[in-house]
Image (tube, rainbow, N blue to C red; front, side, top):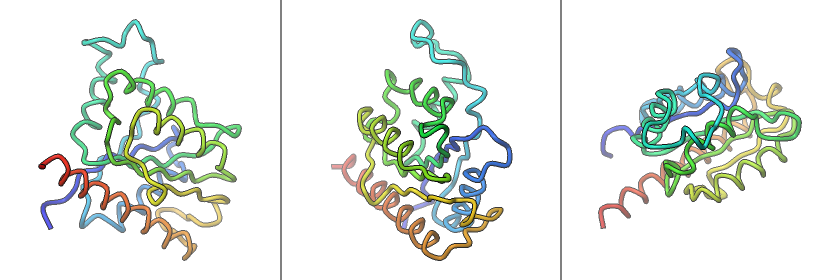
Length: 184
């Protein structure tokens, strides 16, 4: 196996003690030998999307965010659901990448860890599909009743643990396939 793969892990919550940030920590512990994780928890630092600022000199926070996605081999998004939808700060971050196309053909795993999660997950999946991210059925997961399955940086539910391993292995396969495709 080559060196570690680089994955930017984006937490869809702005809370410091977010269950999704804890989940990213648990995944980092599970896959730390194979993956170099760049955890992005700075959604609240990105300015509101403004098409007038979306040019060759975007705000510095946006430029930095885009570069982190660009140099990553893949993206892991772990997000809650707010009022049956995608958190506004996460949607805002993704909006900043539409014209610059950082997600285009980039392998992506999407985990929605929430009380329910299905509606937010479907909405975000539509967004990721329209911006041409490389997301498969195997690289996505909804974890309903997440607070009963994740404690601190541990995944306490065995079915959830196995499902997360499958999602991450699917992401790694997509990254490998993407690397082979770019060499041919």
